[in-house]
Structures are given as structure tokens and as C-alpha cells.
Image (cartoon, rainbow, N blue to C red; front, side, top):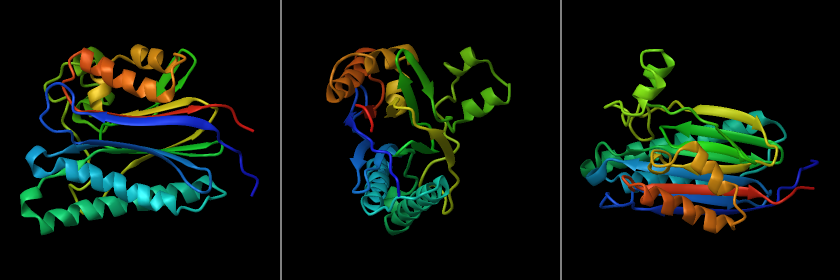
Amino acid sequence: MNRYSIHGTYAYRTDRGKVRKDDEDRSLVLMNAAGEVLLVVADGMGGANKGDVASKMAVDIIASLFKNKKPHLFARGDRTWLRKAYRKANRAIYAYQDAHPEAKGMGTTLVAALLSGKRLLVANVGDSRAYAIKGREGRQLTADQTYVNFLLRAGKIRPEEALTHPDRHVLMNALGIYPSLSLDLYSYRYEGESLLLCSDGLYNQLPLSSIVAIASTDERADQKALAYVYEANGTGGSDNIAVAYWEALGND
């Protein structure tokens, strides 16, 4: 198979923030033996109901499957792999609650970006986000699975109302809540953009312009990840913060 080589640098990081008692977010970036890259962010929900366990389970399961993943010639194979990985994580979290009644109600968001040559696939459940950034331009690759976004897309509220709506944190979907799972899958052609996956603890604190500005600096990837956390905390740090960042260095 004629593969397109990927060369890049990456960093990932989580932070408790300034308000929350515990850190229920998880993030990770991995490269497997096939040269593919996986970025993943999970934002656990449930507080005392083990949201941190749910997010850790989700990331651990998808990471374990990725390490042994085979490359696929067509995007269809990668889409199938992502669906199976998400559904396995969902079943495990749902089953955990049956065995641990004290964890009833736990769940997690999960956004993952699979970079395979010139192909970029993004899978999403919940309201964690994926962004592509090139130069001074950035675009959101996912749609928030929230009640407010549903109202916004249905034309029931205006964009400015969504920012302060009392139900803006209400999720319409999450891993571990139901025995079956639906997820959003997006397919893109990869053109060397920087990729940022993050939880709402970042994007609720920083506008897209600030997110792009940090990615556009000459700092190292780990310094950029730290800058995202620092800036989110500097504007309130009202939630846990998770980031997974990838930056291409040139391809051949």
C-alpha cells in the first residue's frame, strides 16, 4: 500500500481548573506502528458518580484498540473501526454501572480524531470539540450534541442567546448512558492543518480567535498545550480543561 507519511509533533494535557474539586477530563495522543495518529479527549460526567472512571475507561479502551489497529485502504474501514471502538467503550461503561450501583448515572463525552495519511476522520459523542487550524484561520470540525445546539439549529434561539442559555450544558448524548450508542462521524481530507481537541472547559473560556492565536505562535506543541490551560484558567477556569494537540512538521 502506498502510504503518505505523517510527520508532526504533539502534546496533551488536562487540568482541574479553578472551581472543580476533581479532574474528570482525560486526553491522549498516540501514534501506532502503521504511522497513524489518534487524538482523543473525554469529559467525564457524574461527579460523585465516577465521571472520572468513565472518561478514563473510554480513553483507555480506544487507545488499546488503536495500538493494534491495521491500516485500511478505504475510509470505510476506518469508519467501521471507530464505530466499533466507541461501541465497545460504551458497553464497558454501561456494564460497569450494573456491577457498581454507586456509579449509576456516570458517563462521558468522547471526541477522537484519526489521522491516516491524507485522511482525517473525526468521531464525536457529547460536546467536546475538534478544531482544524491553519495560519490565522480555524474551524470547528464537530457539532455539539447539546440541547442548546439543537434549539439553535432548529432556529428556536439566536446565536447570542445560546451563549447564556440556562440549559447550555445539557447534553443530548454521552457514552455509558444507554446500552446502545449513536455517534457523529466526519470525514475530511487532511491538508497539514494543526488539530486541537478539547473539552468545554477550554472553549467556554476562550473564543475561537484566542484558540487560533495560540496555535499560530512559534512555541513548541507542549508549550501551546500549557498555554491553552493557562489562558482558560486565567479567564475563570470554571471547569476541568482537556486538550490534545497535533501539529504537522512536513510530509513526504
